[in-house]
Length: 477
Image (tube, rainbow, N blue to C red; front, top):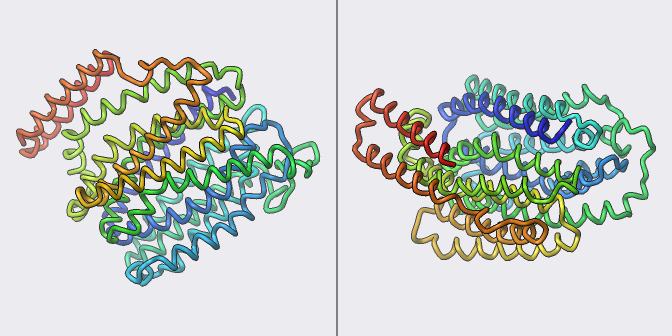
């Protein structure tokens, strides 16, 4: 399957599964309290993400750069995940306040999240085989991940609707069922050969070469895993901090902001980033710049367009999507800040770091580690400097943006050493800037008039105006 077909499949996967789960998850907001939502979507998801990311990311990236390799290294993430889970859960429970751990079904729900992570790690050899076989079997991955997202939303919604007093347990069972569905699809495709024990890439005709466990591939995996730890701390710094400094109710509001905010990231940015990584690792000779320059230039427009259009258009949309009890939380303000500033930087960083992952040498990886440490220091410094002057959630997003700018700086420097990226690549054209600014001014005047609150007709009028001005701006691009 070509890189273009892979990207299209990933985009359709994210679009269909996220739209279905978006509808169901919006219903979950009306069934769960902010406290439960904060515990499940911020804290439990963070524990799960920590287990998954630290156990497999470095090994996965190393294996994806060795197409056709046959090695038992693909089975290591499961066993590494058991060690990571023990450390992560111990640290999490030890540092959690009684207000969190005393919730109904807290420990059984947490255990289910851990089991679900292990189930997902167990099918890592199948995932690697999907993306390194020739042709790639991305269709299997599309079906598996789409099924996982839908099963999670349906099961969780059903359990919360049926047993509202056991909401945390419902989230845990939903997570387990979803990852079970993911594993089931891969097992249906490949069978049980190589499942849970080291037989290399499942179904390979050649015998596994165990000496690979002491070769360059493992060295690259070790370097990547070390990088993954730093990258994970930076990526999840906001969730780590919000879990420590915000009350549970505000964590629920922050979770809503992240869920809605990441919808765009998962539908559009994630397929682009993964397709770029696969394309460059499969055909490194094609990494000569035009594709990277085009994606970088498109991404640079978001930092102009989102702050121009979202502030006057988001409140009318949230008045329909967000349950009234969440308006008293930090959700509306946090979501607006997240979408306007964090999402554009996330897009640009994802593209540049995908290029880095596909082309970096072990020396480049070590250099990136130092920049990531600098990024972490910037995050802490900015958070400390502004925490007392703005809301905690806003301070977290601002600090995350500052830290990400450091990462973007290093990744862009790495890219410019290899391909020709002109300075104008990182900036929109003047005509686009003028059009976006004028559109933003017009929308704000209409929004500030307050007419959109007078009935559905005026509400639709404001959104329609935003749509027309958006099309005009895109036409200028």
